[in-house]
Image (cartoon, rainbow, N blue to C red; front, side, top):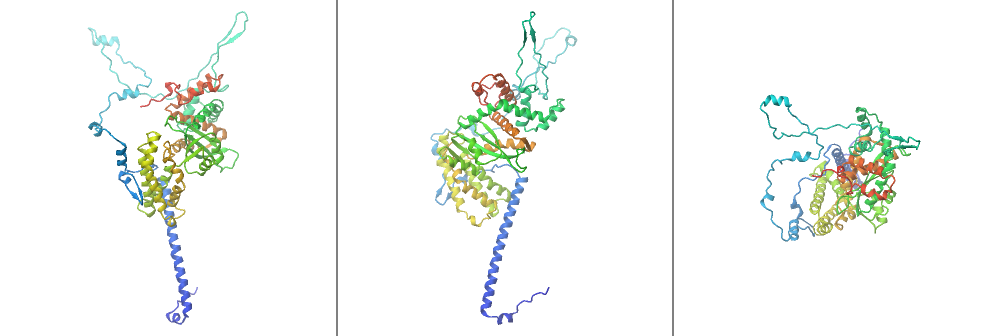
Length: 548
C-alpha cells in the first residue's frame, strides 16, 4: 500500500484561505473529540479497576464491617451553615450533678485469677462420683495399730460421652378375667407417627443437627450409620415434614401472631434453589425472615417463610393486619406496600447498607484515590452518626428520641447536604461510587425515619444475621427438593432461631415441645399453646441455658 505523502509548506501557501480555515476547524474538532474519547476511556478504565478491586475484596478480603478507631474530635465541625453540636457539651448540659468516679473505677488493674471459677462452670453438669480407696487389707498392713480417715482429696475432670441410641421395647400388658369378663390392655404411650420408630428425642437430635448446627441430612445419616443405626436421609426428611404438618404448624402460627402484634419488625430475604417447583431450573425461590428483638418488652421472635417469589403480593399477604414499623434494606417492594397503607405501615431504612457501599470502595481502592477519598469521607460521616447514636442505645424510646433530635439529627443533615454538594456529573454512572451516593440520596426519606421514632434501630443487621443462619445451611445442602421440604424448613428454622434467641437449649426445647403436644392431643390448642412458646415462663429449667 502506497504511503500518502505529507502536504508541503509550499502547497499550504498555495491553498485558499477558506480551505485552510475549514481544515483547521475540522482538525480542532477531531482533536477535541479525541480528547473527550480519551477521557472517557480513562474513566472507564478507572471504573473497571475499581470494580475489579471491589470484587477482589469481596472474594479474598476481610468480611468484617467494623470501622477502625473512631476519633471523637470528628464530631465538632461545620458544613456551610449546619453546625454540629459538640458531644461533650451536650452530655455535660444533660448531666446535672454527676458523681466523679472513685480511683478503683478509673484505674484498671490486672485481675487476679478468680477462685472457684472452674467449679462454678461445672456445677450445672451431671456429676458422677468416682471413689478411689485403699482396701482394708492394705490399710491394715500400712497401719497395724489402726488408722483414721481424713477428708478426701477432691478434684474434677470432664468427660464427653458421644451420642448413643437406646431401643425401647414396649411390652403392653394384656389382662383377661378368669370368667371371661373380657380383655383389658394397659395404656400405650402416644407415638409421634403411626407405626414409626421416631421418638421426641430422636426428632430433636435431627432438628438440632440440621436446623441449629447446619449439618446436612446425608452427613447425619452417615454419622448414625457409624453408630450402627441405619436411617436414610429420605426417612429423616420425611419425618421432619410430617412433624411440621401434624404438630408444629400450630406453634408456628402462634409465634407469627405474636410477631404481628409487635410495634416493629425486621425483614430480609434470600434466594435458594428448589428442585421440583414446576418452574424452570433457573427460577429462584426465596426464604423470607421477619423478626422482633428483645427490647421494650417484646420477646425475640423469628419467623421464616418460604415463598416462590419476592414480589409485593408476598409481603402484602404476610403483613396483613400488621400496623407498625418495618426495618428493611432499600428493596422497592417494601416501600410499595408502605405507600399502599401510609397510616398503618412505616418503612425505616438501613444505614448499614448505605455505609457498606462506601466501606467496600475504601477497602478495595484505598482512601487516597479520588473515588476512595470521597468514599472514606462518607464512611467517616456515617461512622460518626453510629457512634453518637449508640451512646443512647439502651435508653428508653423517649430518651433516645430527644437525644437523636438534639445531637444526631445535625450529623444526618450534614451528611445529606454534603452528598448533594458532590458533582455526580463527573462520576462514572456505572461505577461503585456513583451508585453508593445515589443509594443514600434515593433512600434519604427512609434513612431519616429513626430520627423521629425512638424504637427504630439504625440498621437491619439483626435480620441479615438471622437470614445468614439459613444461608449457612444452604451452602451445606445447596438445594431443597420439594415445596413441602421448603415449608417444613421455614417452620423448623423459626423454632430453632427463636429458641436460641430466648436462651433455650434447642434440643431440650424441641423434645419438650413434642412431648407436651402429645400430652395435649385431646385438648384445643388455645388451652395450652401459650405455655409452650419459647418465651413462656412455663418452659422447664432443663430447657434453659445457663446465663452468665
